[in-house]
Length: 389
Image (cartoon, rainbow, N blue to C red):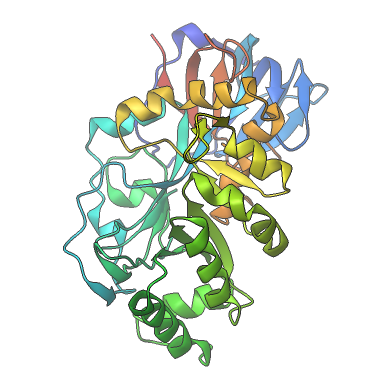
C-alpha cells in the first residue's frame, strides 16, 4: 500500500543522511522539465535521490511514499553559476599564480545565509575565488584563475556545492572542475596568463598541484570562467585565447558585452550576467542586454546581482522583468537552470528534470516567473530541505 503524504505535513530536514533505499513518487498538476517540455498531471519517481521515471502515465512502485501536490507546479532547482556567498574575503592583491589553492577550504556550513538561499530555490551554487586571490569551487566543481589590478594571477581551484549539510564534505559535490580568470587588457596581466597556460600546454598530466588544474582547463576537462570588463578587453581576450582551442570558456562580463555579441556568437562562448535592464552608455535609452545576446545566438545564464540575501530575494522578480521587456520566457527559464549547469559541466546530473538526474526540484503554487508565485517546498537529491510555513 502506498503511503500518501500531503505537502502541509512534510517535515523539512537540512541534512542529507545516507540510509536504506528510499523510493518517493511526487504527483503534481504540472512538471516543467525545462529540456522536454511541460508535463500535465505529472508524476516523478525518485529512488535514492535520483529520478527514475517521469511522465503522466507511469507505474508507481508499490513501496513508494507518495507526495501529493496535485494542485502545484514542479520546477528544477535553480543553479547559480558564480558566487562567493558564505565565503571569507580573499587575501591581498598582486598578480600571481596560485592554482593549488582551493575555495573549498573556505567553506563553513553553519551559516544562516545558506538557509536563505534554499528558500529562494537555489539548490546548486558555483563558488569561485575572489578577485584578490584565494580559490574557487562549485557548491554542488571548480578550479579558478584570477587576474586583475586589485589582485590577480591564478587564484586557485573551485568546486560545486549544494547549500545544505552539516559538514563541508556533505555540501561539496565536486571539488575541482572550474578554472577562472579575472582579465584586464594590460601587458602584465596578459603575460601572466599566457605564461601560466603555455607552461602547462605541453604536458598531459602532472603531479604538481599548481600545474594539473591548468592542464585540465587546457584539455577542456573543466570549464574556464573569465571575468572581463568592457568590449575592448573582450577583443584582447579573444585574441589571447586563440592558441588554446580546447578550452571551454565561459564569459562573465559587464553590460557592454552586447557590442561584441557577433564575436562571442562566432566563438560559441556562453555568457553569465545579472538579470537587469541597462542604459545604453551616454544615453537614457534602456536596453535588454540578455535579450540582445540571446537574439545573437549566445547561450546565457543568470546570477544574482550580489551575494547578499536581498539580491537572492529579488532574483526571480528581476528575471521576470526581463521577460516582460521582451526576453523569451523559455530562454529565461533555461538561463537559471540547464544553461548554468552546462557552463559548470554538471548538466549530466543537474539543471533539468530527467531520468537519471538528481531529484533537485521546487514545488510552486504557480509559474516560477509569475509575480506572486511562492516556492512552497525545495528538494535536494530527493530530500525535503525547505518547506514554506
